[in-house]
Image 1 (tube, helix red, strand yellow):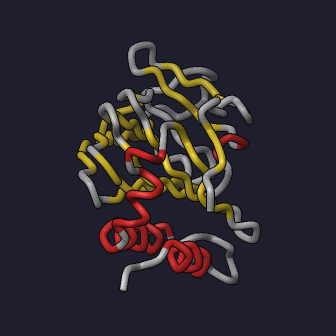
Image 2 (cartoon, rainbow, N blue to C red; image 1 turned 30 degrees about the vertical axis):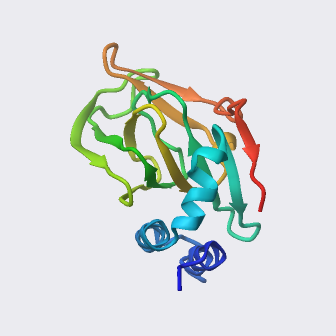
Length: 190
């Protein structure tokens, strides 16, 4: 019997601590890895060739605020180094691969618009592999044409203030609420 999407959603919800309200993102990472490995029908439906392109919201938990998206891209892309603000994200590779680079900030954050960051880790997410980033973790993703992944976020990143970094100019910019919205974002059929 395969690990069903509804069970995954419930397990994500159960990963939240009753007292603190914080998510155990490692538990969510493990559950997403299980979903990718045990439910090929779900992957085909949400990330297969008939799923189309763009970002689709698959599930939003009204109690905790976490959201599950399917990301389906025709063309590859390399993001700038960035964070997800006070939120977190778990990426599960469904098709192709995504190269991940993690960074740490070196400066003391005292100078507005200035930031020094240093690469700390680089790795590739192959199909079935899952990576995670906690609040304010700086990272960069680079995926090839036709890459597809499932992403779980702790909140609506389209409503979070996040930071984006420029390695060449040692600068940092706040990307304000709503500016991350993508025209290809759509709701998926349940």
